[in-house]
Image (cartoon, rainbow, N blue to C red; front, side, top):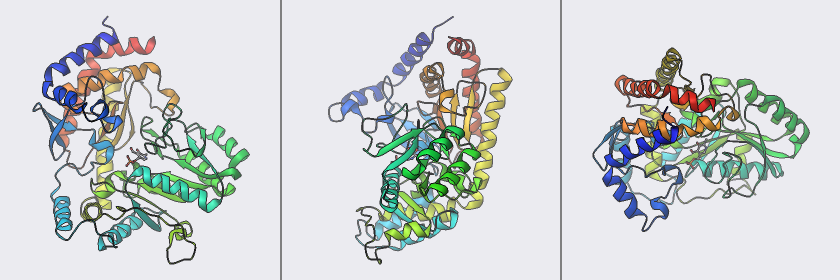
Amino acid sequence: MESLQHAIDDARSRYVAANPLSQAADERAERHLPGGNTRSVLHFHPFPLTIVGGDGAELTDLDGHRYVDFVGEYSAALFGHSNEVIKAAIHEALDSGVAIGAPTPYERELAGLLCNRYPSIDRIRFCNSGTEANLMALSAALAVTGRSKVLAFNDAYHGGVIKFLGGGCRLNIPFDFVLAHYNDIDGTAELLDEMGGEFAAVIVEPILGAGGNIQGNRRFLQMLRQKTVESGALLIFDEVKTARLGPGGIQAMVGIHADLTTMGKFIGGGLPTGAFGGSERIMEHFNPKQAGALAHAGTFNNNVCSMAAGCAAMREIYTPDRAKEFLDWSEAFRLSLNEMFASRDVPMYANGLGSMIAIHFNRKPTKRPSDITAGCQSLRPLLHMELLLDGMLIVGRGDLFLSLPMNDSHLSAARYSLEKFADRYKPLIEQVLAA
Ligand SMILES: Cc1ncc(COP(=O)(O)O)c(C=O)c1O
C-alpha cells in the first residue's frame, strides 16, 4: 500500500507542475519578506498560491486557475469578493474623505446595528482587529477587577499574541494566563472553585475555531457563566468567528450573556476592523464624559471605509433573516458531508457548525482537542493538496468557510471533491489512523 509521505509528495509534485508562476512569485518575494510571507498562517509547503483576482465566491491565481474560495479569509470573507452593495458603500465613503480624526455617522450606525443584534452587548467600541479586541477586553478586565490572572483554554486562538494552540506561543503577551482544557466541565469547574477569585477574566471561544471548529458544550459554557458570576471574574466570549452564526451569534443560540464579547472578521464587510462590547456597567468605564475613565485609543478605530462597509453589510445584506437562512443552508451542507462520509464508512467527519467547518479524520465528532490525534494531523497536507488540485481552496488544517455568494453548485463541487478524496484514500487513511 502507498505510504502517506509518498502520497503527499506525489500530490505536491503535481501542484508544483501546475503552478510555475506562483512558485516564481514566492521565490521573488523572499527578497523583501521573510520566507516571502507577511502572515504566517498563509504559508504552506511547498509554496502558497499567489491570488490575483476574486469575484463572488471564487478566486483566480497567477497561473490562471479558478478556485471556489472555501478559505473565505478565515471567515472574514462572508460577503465574498465583489458585493455591489459593499463596493458602493466604500466608494461613497471614499468620496467624502478618509483618515478623518473625528466621529462620523458611520461608527454610530454600525454600533447600533451590532448592539441591536447581539443580546449581551449594550455598548460597543471599535478597534482594528480581533486580536486588538481581545487585548482590549482582557486589559479592561484587569483594570476593572484589579486582578491579574486570566483563565484561557488549551488550543484556543484569540489572536497572534494570545494563542494557545498546542500549548503556548513565544510571542504571547506576558499576561498571567492559566490554561484549562476546552469542554472539560468538571476539571474547569474545580479550578474555578479553587482559584476563581484570582481571575480577572475567563476568555473562551464558544466554538473552538483554529483548534478544530469544536462546538462548546452548552453545559460547559453555562458552567463558565455560573462560576464567573460567583467569583467576580468577567466572562469574555470571543465571537470573532462565531458572531456570523445565526442572527445573534452563539450567545443568542445558547442564551448566555457574557460580560464582554469580542468581534471582528466579517463585521466590517470584509475590511479590517474589530470590536469589543458588553454590559453597560462594564463599558461605562470607557465613557470619556466620566472622570477617571479608561482611555481607549486607536487612530483607525473608526476608519470610515470599514465602518461604512460594515453598515451596508449588516444593514442591507446580513439581516437577521438572511443570517438564519444562511445558517440552515450551510448546516444542511455540513450534515450532508457527514452522511456521505458515513455511507462510505471512511473515518472523516465535518466538525463545526453551519458555515464554520473543519474536516477531521475520525468517524465521530471531535468534542475535545485531545480527540485530534497525530495521525489525524498528518493527513491534513494530503487533503489540502488534493482539494487545491481539484479547484477547492481550503485552509491547510482542513477548515472550510462558506460565504454568502456561494450557491448549491459550489457546495456540490466541494462535496464531490471530498467524495473522490474519501474513495481514493480510504485504505491509506485507515492505515495511518491505525498506526
Ligand atoms: C476566535 C478568534 N479570535 C481572534 C482572532 C484574531 O482576529 P484578527 O486576525 O482579526 O486579529 C481570530 C482570528 O482568526 C479568531 O479566530
